[in-house]
Image (cartoon, rainbow, N blue to C red):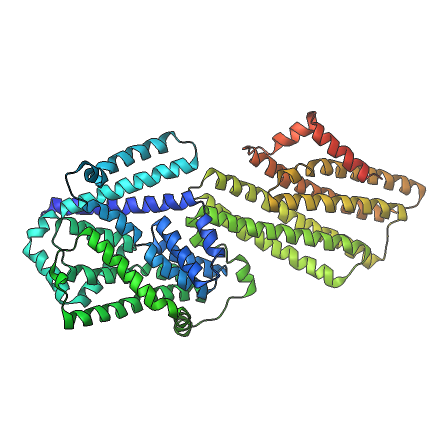
Length: 585
């Protein structure tokens, strides 16, 4: 094997790994985060968890990706350790699908149908279709489908290149002696398989490399079996590395992955080689094909799963005993769903952000309601609670906006990009609503400390304005949480009514001031209160308009406002008249 064959081997391996990575990433994007959501929510039983682990891994073609996602789920508190163990076992079998796909390269025969089934025949066609789809398609799903086809084609071309590069090794005595050494010393084969897979961090890829070697070289079962066993252990390096920055629970998930593979390899290999020692399997000296490797890889994972499935609870106890630690505090748990492991699946990451932004909005709404209640009945404990809620909302803003910016740095679908833009626009407005709630609480505090009250007429006007602002805030938050345009379009008419209310209430105060029914001091307090009311309504308008504009594929939030203020929209005018009569003073 000369230097050029080595270069061809390296190039083939690079193409193979890139193709597998491209295909896996495109499959995840095509799924749009739905598979991850299913994993997170539908794992109530072991059987269901096993099936889900199998299906998700078979679709995204990577058990490592599935287990890393599980590490993120547990680290975020979305799932418990016990839920993940059956999923891991399902993922171990699901990952064998890749080996079966790659085994098609071993199809031989002169019949037209058999030739058509060979990757050499259909891979170029898939590559051409994939390139055309990515170049002309405007739909993200079609582009991702094209990338899947390209990834598969590149993967198969890489496998073919590796097979061609190592063809000369079939007559190389040194290489044959190495293979014989693995057969005589299975432990060495397991170690080599583990190390190689740990380096490339994919059992599917390392099994594919072994299949490429099997296409041209004489690899006996005695060599292939221990290497395959080692490859199954080596794939656990990915969740182990991913869990290093996580909490105790996430490290336990990584440990569970390792224990399942280690115990499976020990039990299966001890049983297999013990029987082989006494019986002697004749096939051990025979050549192992790419299809045979897929069979062995699958059988190992099926046998180990059947053996270990009844002991899921015991495996959980072992991981808890060996990986000790303490739980994180509640504050950390609130934001732990913003796990950086989810950034590889933007749709799922965006969904987690949306959930937190909706929680943040509800906190601001609660804070505002508590603040206006203080105007009539001041309570120091409630005032202190509003201060705490305002501080918490600030943390929500900091954490979620930072995470959304990280998501935006990745390649996203058009839908996810619109969602990120919407959330980034809304976060600032929600935080400001919380600030104004605290300002209103401070107005109530000032009135309480100075023991002053508004006149009956002013109290009546303020109550009308309060009801209007409470409703506009409810509409804005509901439209955000439910992403409902029907609710969002009701916000701007009410916001304009609130603007008119502010002017009327100030005019009423000036008249009362002239008549001596109010004081200048109360005028300043009233102005401060109304200004905060108006600002809250403005921010509600910003949230609703953002939802409306982005839903219509526009990122210019002034377009809608210009249209309704200067146009002749019958629906807007009807709603404006409705709210004007409802909140008349």
